[in-house]
Image 1 (cartoon, helix red, strand yellow):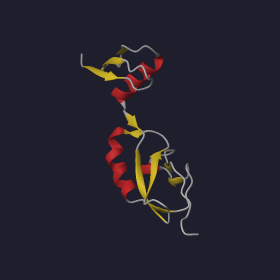
Image 2 (cartoon, rainbow, N blue to C red):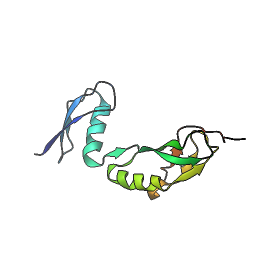
Image 3 (tube, rainbow, N blue to C red):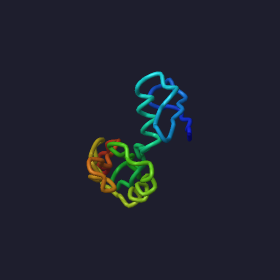
Image 4 (cartoon, helix red, strand yellow):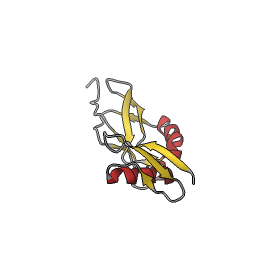
Length: 121
């Protein structure tokens, strides 16, 4: 029976979880979020991808970005390569969609997380 130990990150408590990888039985959680986290982390882990993209015409050379929803953990490096190819121009507002359906994942967009005005005007 392969067991995996995890620290739950769904709340500040940080429960130490033990998850049976075959049955997805979770032990050690103090709330239902821990059970959901343990099951998901063992069966199909996902993460929000955060990074920066080049921005022209702004006060800074880089604009912080993130995915609008978690993507499969196995696609993080592919996502970073795709982000490296993105370049935008000011103005941009926080929440603007920069790449729709990022990595071909329907409903997951790459969005700006900071607003920039166009410099020099």
